[in-house]
Amino acid sequence: MKAASQTIMFFISVDCLAQLFPVKSQLASTAFPVCTAGTFKQLTVPMGSTHIMLLPNCTADSMEYLDTNPFWYSFTCFTGGTLGFLITPSDPGDDYDWMIYDITGHDPDDAYTTVGLIDSGNWAGTPGLTGSRNGGNARIECATFPPDSITSFSSMPVLAEGHHYLLFISHYNQTESGYSLYFGGGTAIIYDSGTKPLRASFTTNGGMCPQDLISFNNTSTIDPVSWYWNFGDGNTSEDKNPGSHLFPHVNGGKIFNVSLIAENSIGCKDTATAQITKLQSCEVTVPNAFTPNGDGLNDYLYPVNALSLNDLEFRVFNRFGQLIFESRDAAKKWDGRLNGQMQPNGTYIWLLHYTDYSGRIVKETGSTLLIR
Image (cartoon, rainbow, N blue to C red; front, side, top):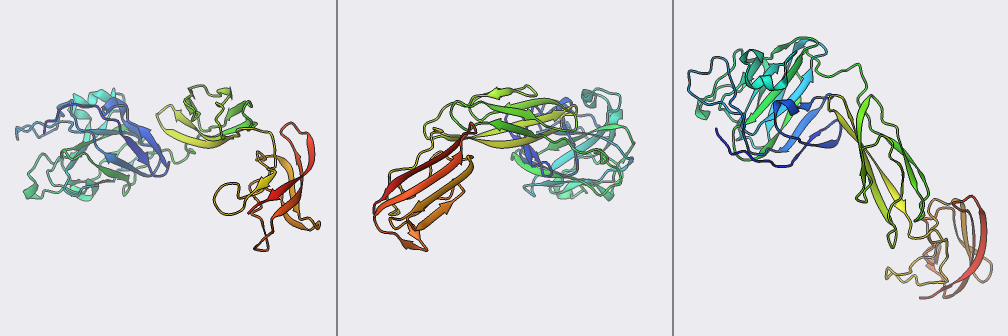
């Protein structure tokens, strides 16, 4: 049951929050907060152990109970009652053990030294599903051999309203395979059902041109206390509102993925993301020639750098004055066809109206050569 200590980076996700959290370390003092209802999914389990765990009535078997490859979860009981939960190993052959501690008024690390904090647990060597449920073993099961098939379920502990608890999970096997953890089946409520969950959010404004500054306004709600911005260009900030940001100029333009992680006082986190488009140039132009032959080069006629322009109107006429293409969307491009039929080579007249980034009304006309 011993394992060498080592540090491995990995991630945990909560289904209802749809996000990943980096693990600081696997200690009682850095337990994952149970922020809301949902299923915790641990994709992998790092190897290591640092403590000998104390168990009531399990000293006679001369076994050494270790925090083998441990995980810890922290929660407060908002409505007293029974606690049901289920641990489902990703590998059905893996053996998971667990204990629940009432650490109300204690330092979390007291779980390592104070037997009296233990409410429930199960250390049976039976692989597969484990947890607490109706009909489970009424006492803490000590270590057993897998062939004995001792039940790996204990009866549901009774939680007291307002008390703070830790759930410790030990992964006896050395496979690094993960598990899912679902809280449910009991009557206790271990998340604040009367309070809306933390939500990270932000708004942006500013131009898309190379030298335009983008401002970010943090609109996160439900009492966040810290923030982490990642602008997707190698720059980060821990300010609540980081102010205006100048993205680097990139030939051909680029989309930058910006994220904000908000965290509240009990360690719950939420992430908001947005995409910021920066153009290579804001000079709106229409090509003087295009070749709609399907080779992926110059196949379309459209106003370049016209994204997000206001009141855009682009029209194309043939030499007889017939309107053959019209668009008010910069992403819609003429492919050289009319009613599905490729138009002949020659010169086509275009009209372009729009309001530019500074609010100036622009009206332009010109001609483009269609070449096949």
